[in-house]
Image 1 (cartoon, one colour):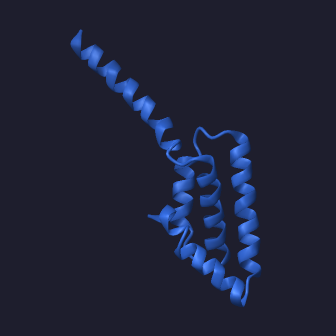
Image 2 (cartoon, one colour):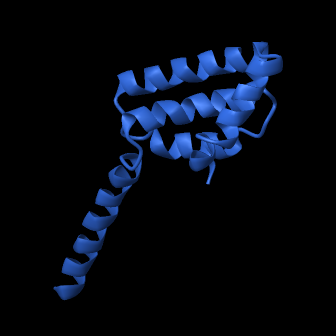
Length: 104
């Protein structure tokens, strides 16, 4: 009987942990992370760390948040692909600064 109770308790904790991971990033951070992925992809940098985090954090997100994040990624991708000179430097600075927290 104790074994069954232990198994049920472990299963309950495991199922509660999955949504908790998705909620570690707030909605705003999730959208910013998506922007970082678009910027990195747009200038030819490795976007895999951002995309992996997005994939894990996208579970259990509301559809409107996923839509906003996708729009931010697409806009950042276009911005980065068209950037030159000073604009390119600002994108590099954003990736090295604000976005670096999401890639860790």
